[in-house]
Image (cartoon, rainbow, N blue to C red; front, side, top):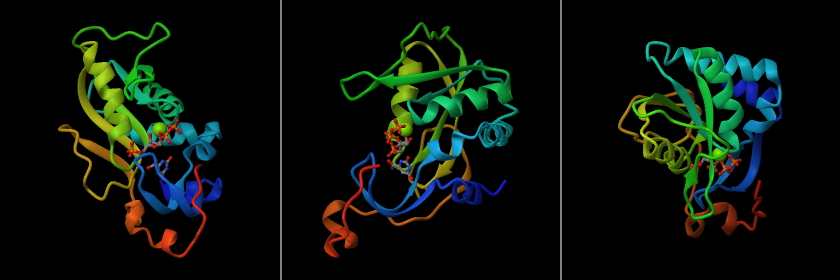
Length: 183
Ligand SMILES: O=P(O)(O)OC[C@H]1O[C@H](OP(=O)(O)OP(=O)(O)O)[C@H](O)[C@@H]1O
Ligand SMILES: O=C(O)c1cc(=O)[nH]c(=O)[nH]1
Ligand SMILES: [Mg+2]
């Protein structure tokens, strides 16, 4: 599956000057909602990502809202598992709400649309582990962490992308006066 081509085709590959969740700046932003709005592509992504973990027997898949909601659903469908999502808890972490439950010992796969630092998916992982879940792997559509994200379990992505990202004080786009976009 040519994931970059899918982002491009759906208008989800943005070029400019973007503020990332982590506070880093980047000339590239992958707007996964623009891709996942197409059920046909979303299902294809879910099947491809699920396939990378088909040997793991998982009870549920979890992703951090919002980007991880649709993705969790399509991957869980491919794996025959439940689809959970974690939500911001208002205190910098994430939590399970809306009657979504974890049974102690449940094996789970965490999924994320785009991993930059991995902090967002880590919060969803903590929420599931706090309820007794056992993490077996992390899957992403795109890994743009340049090998820096480490979850202590297999981390597999459909696409590894090497794109520039800068600390604000070292950002050349800021230096050139390019307006910063919050997507
Ligand atoms: O690996 P990280 O450094 O945490 O960055 C990547 C995160 O940023 C985006 O989510 P965002 O927080 O913008 O919110 P959304 O999912 O609600 O769109 C994306 O969906 C990842 O969750
Ligand atoms: O790091 C981020 O916040 C981020 C990067 C990216 O390419 N896409 C996205 O949704 N978030
Ligand atoms: Mg997100």
